[in-house]
Image 1 (cartoon, rainbow, N blue to C red):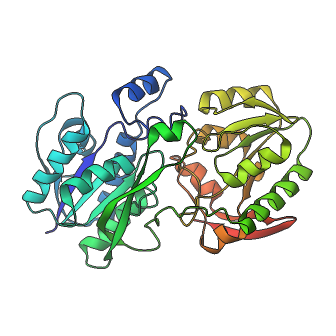
Image 2 (image 1 turned 90 degrees about the horizontal axis):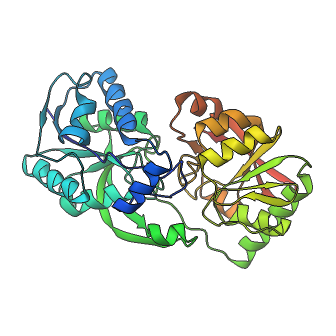
Image 3 (image 1 turned 60 degrees about the vertical axis):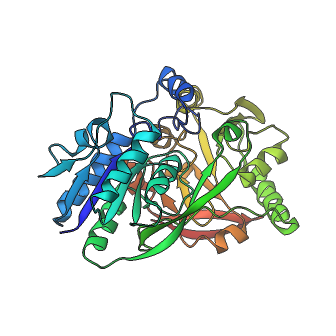
Length: 369
């Protein structure tokens, strides 16, 4: 029977809906809690475990203690072994230490719930000794070791245990969160991890946008079209990214490159907004649209780096009022679009087909999976 290590980073993703773009560091975590952030990882861990239990595949689970996996496993897994000890508050060092203990005890694969920071910690302990698999629960998740969502992670683990999924080396990337909060994207490659792979369920590493003259012209053409089609007395929620920023530039308003902003009748009414601010705006304005651009290669339109546009926000705005924009070059390397909002009903609503504006008065129908 295959041995599966399982570790949960209990604070991963808490900075998303409150607009903090991560939870690295005690001070940021404290601020997230003050802003009303709630734990995300335990729920994602439970979804993964329940889905895996339903699949009926046998495995010998080695679980991190207490809030790092034990609590979520009780009542879902029939039997498991708790590895290591932790206090009431956990740290990156706990992840590193417990991951090493699991490898020493012969796990065949190590599954973790977290984001890019957690992937870095696991890589530090594991290296390429055993494959690792990420259950996405962070804010960014640019690395290529993550499944598309918790249910996809359960399917990949099943395939791996049954010998039906191959492995590959994938990039482990992370950003400088301080720079990210200061509107600067600084991504660093920390190494390569061995990870199970199935293109249906595993995301690719984020592909950076190269701002060539052709790319910039394409962004301006998209922006011109969107601005021409904008309606009066309508709230426009603008997601992160250079293509959406080009729309703000065309409007003549300032936009945070990596945050979520809101515009009404050509004026900024919220800058670097969080979920609470967006919901208040949606209660104030009767008509609203959301404009987003997918993450390059990964294809996520929601659930990666824009968790401020939460399921509650999406439910209020509705699928028909979402505008997706992307340059031709980005779409050429992004075969499908994805959504991982954290709400299965919202994800189901958006799956199917959606129009993507790829140039001036030019659209492409793309599948959302």
